[in-house]
Image 1: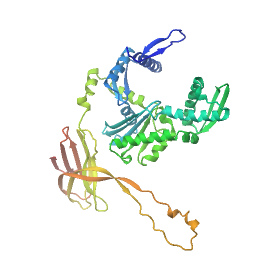
Image 2 (image 1 turned 90 degrees about the horizontal axis):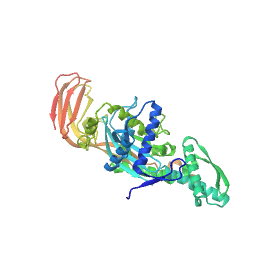
Image 3 (image 1 turned 120 degrees about the horizontal axis):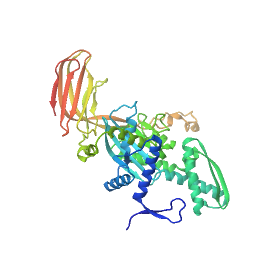
Image 4 (image 1 turned 60 degrees about the vertical axis):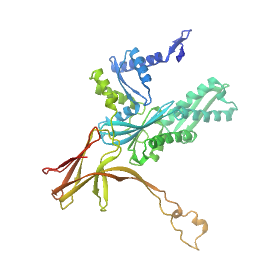
Amino acid sequence: SGTVAFSVKDKNEEETSTVSVSEATTRYLRRLVGSASDYLGKKVTSAVVTVPTNFTEKQREALIKAANDADIEILQLISDPVAAVLAYDARPEAKIEDKIIVVADLGGTRSDVAVIASRGGLYTILATAHDYEFAGVHLDNALMEHFAKEFQKKHNIDPRNNTRSLAKLRLESEATKRALSLGSNAQFSVESLADGFDFSVTINRIRYEMVARKVFEGFNRLIEGVVKKAGLDVLDIDEVILSGGTAHTPRIANNLRGIFPETTEIQAPATSVSAINPSEVLARGAALQASLIQEYEAADIEQSTHPAVTTVKHISNAIGVITVGADGEDVFTPIIAPETAAPARRTIHIPAPKEGGDVLIKIVEGNTHIKVTTPEPKAKEGNGDKDEDDSDFDDSDEEEEETREKIWKVGNPLAEAAIKGVKAGGKVEVTINVLADLGVTVTAREVGGKGGVRGNI
């Protein structure tokens, strides 16, 4: 009938049975729920399940059917990156603030990366990418190639030419990769790898990272590419969350530490002691979502995920005020960040002049710009007595790297408001409210004072 299926031999039965993809999924889900029920000591009847962002409607329907066949009610399907962000935002020490987050889900056979705008607890996916060329299996392959060549050098036999030897090679390479994620050295050891020859060798993490360098570079390009796809720069990213089993590899997180600025939090075991286990972060996010919606009726949950609710308008530019900086220059202070879903409401307090008096509030749009500063080449000082060889090692001849910083550029003016007679050392409260139709209401008043101004833009 053209349906994809597996030939499976259950237990020690001689005859094989044909199992469809749907049935295999049902068996897998039934096993997972059985393990969860045993751990909790009570039966699990419903669940929230995470899915990739490129899951089609047909795939969603097929997954729900497979779950129902396993006697599991799907409360909700949520996207993988949103589950990861939710897991981190739900921590007691987490601060819910506007930020741009990259979620890199690095699995065994594929990698998925998403850029998410988190605005007041609402998540908007700005860009995604899905890749099958750089994943955990490719790190395994790099180690397999390395060990196969080492074995061939020693015994003049290529273990990759034999199916059984290749399987042993792959299994031990994967175990070695996991060991190198935890320690600086690992032992690769296989009995009778090929033609009866045992093979045992030690590899350190530095050697492993050199062997798999192209794969690690591929992860870097994939993540940087999604940031560019979202129309952003690495300087715009506030947080990077790594999930998936492959994310345990320290080199991946350390590379990202060099790509993103110091202000960007890299949430991975290698760079943060408080990072959630990458293998569990999606499950934790799903569990948290389940705890939030378990008391709701199915109809209410379905209605809350309807496109009419989840698809809303966003502002493309930031909205803020112009203030005077310490150097006397105008400075843009954002109040509502770009890519914020409407409706939205934000408030800030602006210090008034020390001597008090009237305060003029200028409401404008703004957007970020990457300022690149290239250092001027240093002039070479003539010194006839200086040895030419010594000049080759003069540190002053080394070229300085260019510096990149994110700055705000003032855009279109939207409105002006004047607050009269502000007391010395006082503050002015400015509230911007973006309506569902993207209309904007501005309210300004002196903190602790009477009256104020309000207007629509």
